[in-house]
Length: 567
Image 1 (cartoon, helix red, strand yellow):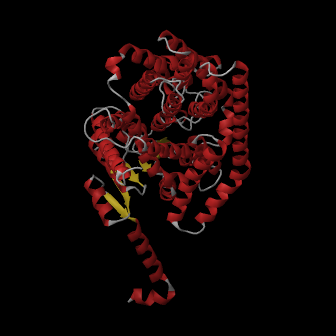
Image 2 (spheres, one colour):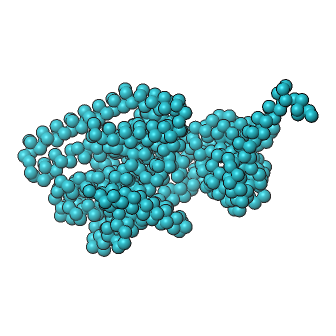
Image 3 (cartoon, helix red, strand yellow):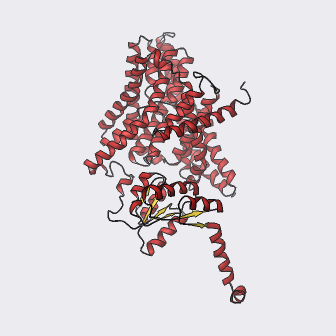
């Protein structure tokens, strides 16, 4: 039984350490993920000081994976999943098979039994969904064609791992020599048949029942007007479907949550559901990386350095080479194949689950398990650097060969919608919601050139459909401001309701990019007004105050009050 303060301790110390070391990593120009992983090492049992509960941490991390996959499902329709099946299914299965064979051969070179070699190789073949999604989100690639292929690839890998986890007990008996061949083959066939039936049953229930029930439920809750009930409904759907699918159909929590989000995507309320789940999703995703760090024993780097290096190279170079080769064989463009190669060059959550099950069945030794964990940690640390290289490679390729940015390569990529080359002295409208859209229209009607900045894909599409040049991304990012030609703009209007985020962006804009630009911002309280002005805004609009003034003018213009106004 856990000590009553274990949960509080792991949440408190986990978030504090992750924040402190994540900020330090950011200052050192490293990915914050590196700081989160180091926080886990500090809180783990292999370093002195505070030691977090080793059983609670993975469970909390699993919540982050569930919420993350639910959020991905909210932006990924069934039609998009079907559209990438031609590349995702053979690519993912081919990568798993090839990397498993390479890992098995390396295990045999280490002198391990066959069962241990197979489990070891299989654990090295499946990428971390959390890591890939974070990287794709940061680069605004989730809605691109290559991003959709990567997500489909991950979904297929998850399904394959679900099957592997069910078959492993039977397979371990056969490979380990504990059962006769005929009996072992029958055991595998039975387990395979049961798994396929359960997966088919899960998909059928989700498509027939979930497709109707989930959007209907959320619409009913939204009709009550109770914000907390709506947020609770979103979390209940994400966690409830994930838990129920795991218990009833033996599929992974992450896969169940993904399907729940994907079906909810058909509802008009999907964007509100995504926004409500975002804070918890980010917080618990951090705990995933902390829990990975807690499992890592740094001594293995000194006790088995060459084995660690070989395992790391299979995970990074091996998986990348296999993914790139298969992608090119399937006819994908070079840039898309490179993106997939970098995405698959690490391992994560399913590798840990597989290693734990293998150790529990007695087919995976402690040395092999530690090598898998070491390779996971090192590859997750290295992967952000690989994505930085991908960004530079992409820029070089497009510079030398502009034809790479074609609809067949990246249907939705922002590079297909460049700003007019001669645009300058324009107004930047940040946010294309209800306020920003009306503001952009009013400015355009007065012949003011407008550029829109927005981080939501649907709103960006609407802005472009309305005829406005638009840049997708977070306005706090320097690259986004540069793409919007902020250095040549006359005015920036922050129509977003998030004053803290707007304040940081205003400070960077005025300090580093265009000190002469005029800035107006939207606020919802006197405190937000002060914050925005302190950060460099030239003027603010307090929405509630302006609304009150407008209503007062309308009241005083009504016939009963005209005489009072005239007097």
